[in-house]
Length: 293
Ligand code: G1P
Image 1 (cartoon, helix red, strand yellow):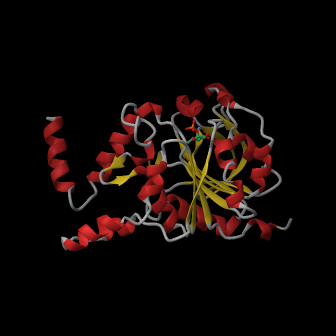
Image 2 (cartoon, rainbow, N blue to C red):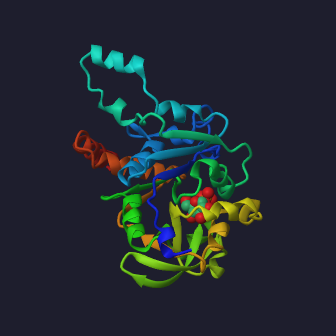
Image 3 (cartoon, rainbow, N blue to C red):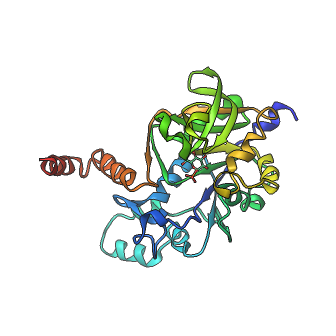
């Protein structure tokens, strides 16, 4: 294959949202974790907005039991629109959360076999095109957003890209970690990838932070991928097999990342975004000061 075949535009994105959200129980007993709001938008909408900004046109949700409200969220809500119109209120919040007809696709991951398996469940919709992946737990805040920065890098180098960021060394065993090669600005060549390494075996402290642009060949690798860390089918292990066969780079995201998979990260994100919202920043700052005594 020529390098040109690794440069088709990225139009599709996969959102693995089948996880059970056990860390947020009982909040997530009856509603999906991805629907927990940061202020007034559910977590999933931040990822979708980031995708839209990056030019994504097709949104593929890999869902599971009890996740239907995620799909509802992006639908048209006629009754609400009628009510808001009647009351002379802005329709913008509803319009912002509505997907263009035919652009939202869902597929179920029927068994929790890991992230690699979740992505593979989307193979029919992905077809023979490069695609993005968003892990919505990772809230990436930047201007431009993380995926837009990645798409801009992709336009230069093509192939496969992951977003990375530095974490303290003792935290690497919770993540996918890259073995970095040559660096050119925000772009780093990826020479190796390992999922959840032991701290003393990690090739660096650059972790994969939940955003990917991958070539469709990864689906064939996932189809036969053995179980890895945590006895799950790992996306990282399949990606590692692409290194050397196709271009593979990491993009250091210029922006802020909040780990909304953890409770403290969720609170941090809520506070940080509230302090930046013109409609509430002053009040929230005053409250925070008061609380901190
Ligand atoms: C997943 C990926 C891992 C990545 C992480 C980012 O892990 O497998 O490579 O670094 O997301 O949040 P998980 O959090 O599902 O264990």
